[in-house]
Structure formats: C-alpha cells, structure tokens
Image (cartoon, rainbow, N blue to C red; front, side, top):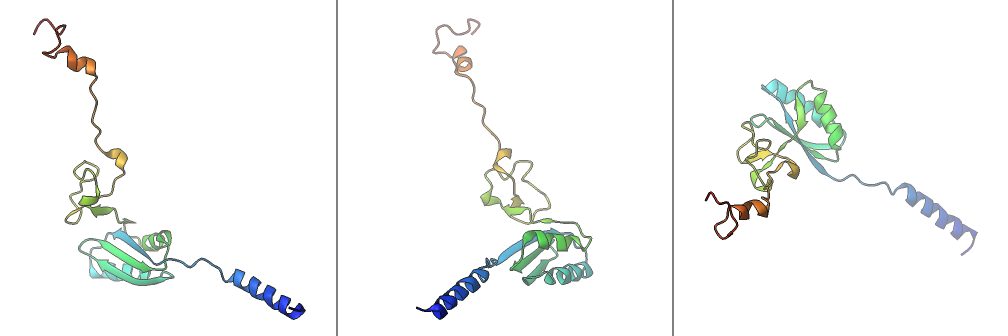
Length: 150
C-alpha cells in the first residue's frame, strides 16, 4: 500500500466520521390541547404539521388530543403548539390498568376519557401504617398482663 492508498484510507476514515450523526428515532408525541371548534382544530393541525420532522398529525377534538408522529422532539412540538395561544400540556392520561391506585384523588379525573386516569408518580400512593406490637398485645385476650379493665 503506497502513499495513494494511505491517503485514500485516511480520507474515507474522516468522511465516515462526519456522517456518523445520530439518526433521530420516530417518536409519537401526544398533547392535550383545548379546542372548541373546527377552526381551532385546523389552526393546531396546520401549525404542528409545519414542525420539522413531523410525518403525521392526528387531531381528536372530542378528547382534546393531538398526536404528532415523526422525527420530532417533544419540547419543540409543545413549543409549537403553545404558539397557537391555546391551553396546551403533554397528554396526562394513561389506562387505569397501569396505575396501582387509580381512584386516589390525584389520579381520578372527571374529564378523563373512558378507562383513563391521570398519570401519577408512585410516591402519591396510599401507604399502610404498621401498628406497634406493644399496642396490639396490650389489649389482647391472650396476654395475662393485659388491661385490667377488660
């Protein structure tokens, strides 16, 4: 391998290093957007379809849900949706089967779609309190030194 071969090897090595950008993954971003009429729906759809990398935009006015699929970043989609001056948040609902305690006050939402509850962290769940053994044995029938009032 001469000088020409070495130069060719180095040039392919350097050119392949530039091309190794990470490919964006296809993502699905779900948003809850307050929409009242067809005009609102059209406005949101037009703005979100203009986001770089968006392949499809699905709008469900009844559920107030917009789903954007494509090579997009959730923060950019959220920012674009907020530019429509509508009330926008990330889709907060999950199927109630995925939540440990779906009827806790923070999870239950009257406005949620059927079979859905708000996504909550596990720290909000109800914890059982352990009662000290001294208190349970103090009033036990098996304890001869139990309370004399009983």
